[in-house]
Amino acid sequence: MKKNKPILLVGLGAIGSIIFSRLTRNYYQVVGLTSKTGTDKIREKGLRVKLIEDLNPQLHECEVYDILPEKYVFDTCIVTTKSWINEQVIDELFSHLSDNASILLFQNGLKVEDPFLRKSKKWKIFRAITSIAAARNEKNGAIEINTGFTKVGRINDKTSRSNIWISLLTAVGIPVTASKNINREIWLKAIVNCSICPLGAITRLKNGEILADLFLNSLMKKVVEEILMILPENISIDFDEAFELIEQIIQQSANHKCSMLQDVENGRKTEIDSLNGAIVVIAASQEVKVPLNFQLTEIVKKLTEEKYPKELAILDLRKLS
Image (tube, rainbow, N blue to C red):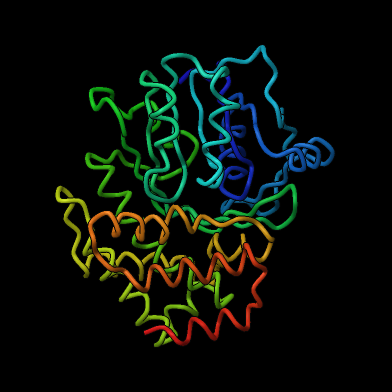
C-alpha cells in the first residue's frame, strides 16, 4: 500500500483513533470521516492519542470530515464505526470508493459486512477480528490499553489474498495474522463479545470483575452453550476453546470496561443487535430457543432505548438462570 495514496478511515472512536495515530506516525496519509460533533471537536483541538509505548499522549492534526468532499475517491478504506451504522455509512461512502476498493471492517458482530456486499460486487471486503482494547478519555482523545491480537481474512472472492492489510497493520505496529477461515474467527469472537459485553453493560463492572463473580461467570458459560447450538454446519468450535478465549481476553483487559458498557455510560446506541440480537434471529430461523441471549438483548435495549434504571436492569439480570 503506497504511503502517498490516502487511506479513508471511517470512525474516530477509541479503536479508530488508535489506528489513525498508528497510521499517521508511520507517515501514511489518512482522511477521517466521523460525526459532525467529532469533526468539530477534532478540528478545534486535534486528536490526542496515547499508545501503549507512549509516556505521554501525542496530539495529531487531522484532515477530518463529517461529509466527504466530492474530490475524494479512495482505493483503501478502514471502517471502525459501530456496526449498526453500516447501512447509513454505505450511502455516504458509495461515490467515494473506487470500483475495486479494498475495505477492512474493524467491527464486532455477525453479518456486519452485508450492507457492503449488497451495494457492490466488486469491492474486496475483509474483516478484522481483534482483541485490541482502547478507551476514550476525552471527546477528542483515546488511550490504547492492549494491542492484543488481530486476524484478517477475506469475506468475498477468496482468490484475493489479505496481504495488503497484513502488511499495513504489521508496518504500523499492530500484531496481525492472516486467517484461512475468517468466518470461524467471526463466530468465535462473537461468542466472546456476546458473553462479556451485555453483562458489563448491565452491571457496570469491569471485565475482570465479571469473570470473578460466580453468578456472572455461570451466565457467561450458558451464553456460550446456547450459541454453540446454532453454529453453521461448516464451523466447529467447542466449549473449552471458546471459554478459554473469553478468560484470556478478560485477563488481558481485566481493568477495562467493555465497549458496550462505554456506550451505555455515554448514552450511545450499542451493538447488541449485531451480537446477542443476531444470535436470537439466527436461532429463530433454526427453530432453536436461546432464552438467555434473548433476555440479555431485551435488558440492554431497555437500558439504552427506554432509559431503564440501571438498578432495575441489574435486578432483571439477577433473575436469570
